[in-house]
Amino acid sequence: MERINHANDKYNGWMGFITSALIATNYTENGWGLTRAPEHITKLLQDRLYQTLEVTKVTTKQECSIDETTGKEECIDIQQEIIEPSTDNNKNTRKEHFINVIGGDDNARPVMISDYHQNMEILNEMKPIFEEWSGIPLEGSTAYGIRAYRNNSNLLMHVDKSSTHVISGIYHVDRSDDAKPWPIVIEDYKGNTNQVYLEPGDLLFYESSKCFHGRPQTFIGGYYASLFMHYRPVDFDHENINNEIHYAIPQHWHETKPPKEGLDVMEVVGTSFKEPNCKHLLCSLDEGNEMSKNTVNWYGPAPKGKVVTTGWNPTTMTPPESWDDDDLLGGDDEL
Image (cartoon, rainbow, N blue to C red; front, side):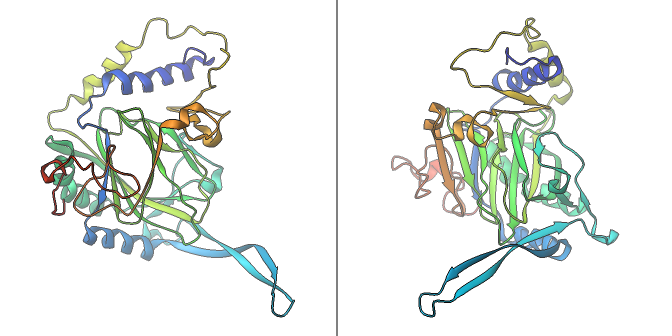
């Protein structure tokens, strides 16, 4: 951070890292968890997505090969799904306004498929599940989406608003048939960088103002759609926490040090950051970087009624053998 040149970027960077390291409270052991969401809500969201999304298919290239039997060349069209906001105002879709943490050109900006009342109903219905995971009483802050990311976009690493986005969830609704795997990346409290590959109907819990998270890899595909839910503790002092962040920034924040050999380069983009010299803009995802040794891959679908997290077996999605049923949030029943 001390090697960032631009004063505004430097201050924004300090705010993000100070919030994560010092100011934001951690409420869970690892900062994240993965479970299956209620099937009736998944269907509700998928119905909204399918009834609203306008998808066209375009041929991007041809792939040809020689048939071993006939010796003739055979070619197939490779198609890509393209989505655009609907021209029907009743469908309540729009291109999302510019957000500096979301990369890509104007054609890659996400499409928002909004239903405020349904989102608030889901936020309220899901609240007990989030309270069970976090262990504290909560009140809803906001739920937004469905956000459909589009081809050639990415989401840089960041933390969320500390005043409202405390206990959060990413509800993966669905993705296009041509979508390549696109993990959510989240840093936990044990020093791991977790790449979580969600399946439709998976729900990722995370402490979004504490844990750095993003999707720094470039998304390839037609769309990737999710609903985002945010809660805060009951009686949370959301007005004072912003002042605490500013007061915690060190007095020497404006000083700039020269580059240091062996130290990875970091750039601040608005309220997010990237490491431009590393693969996927994050050194912990670059196999050639020492930071990648603590990267763990997790593949959905998550088991029903249990919350997978750091310490579980990422291959089998099972808990440590030393755990008994009381250690499994939700036990054998659905959350």
